[in-house]
Length: 226
Ligand SMILES: N[C@@H](CCC(=O)N[C@@H](CS)C(=O)NCC(=O)O)C(=O)O
Image 1 (cartoon, rainbow, N blue to C red):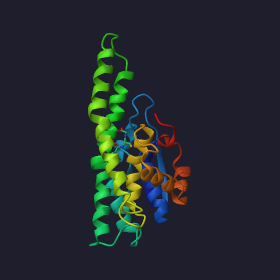
Image 2: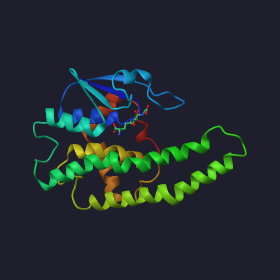
Image 3: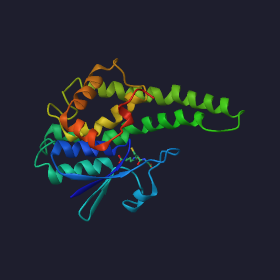
């Protein structure tokens, strides 16, 4: 039996969704973020040394890192589902988006989270305006322009085909859901990008997505922009 080590409000929601789409049974072991630091609890390090989510165990196999988990599950349990045939142009696009989601799209989104967080932290009163000034400069001159560059690119790519890898829904779309949901919740993705907005609406309407959400519990990335 596959166990998903599931951290609340995290990327492991995407793994639950993939398993629902594949129709593979699984169990969930739940972990709660520290309310102050937002870090995963130390027990997750007993499963994998980095203690990050997602991580799955399948018998005596442990797999961490979302992209690797997606590849493992689709290869082992997909029976040809959710991945374009090897050697096709769609397969190359599939591999590209599978890596792009964490390798290129997430870093500026993480920076946005951190640089938005710094000015809210306790610090001597005379430092606060300086910290706020530096963070807003980095946000305006680097982070938001980079995010817009990526969002424009993704918007134009979704103008070429219905889904990221081509005309068929694939696990690359599952992998791409997290950066797009994060971009929406961080205020960078709105109706001015209709293809990406429609993509989010389409995935959120899928029965597998809804079933995973019900099982996973709270997922703040679907809430109002923060
Ligand atoms: N690139 C990794 C990122 C893993 C990651 O940073 N996960 C976050 C949750 S979305 C986490 O575990 N945060 C809590 C912590 O760092 O302690 C992946 O896709 O698996």
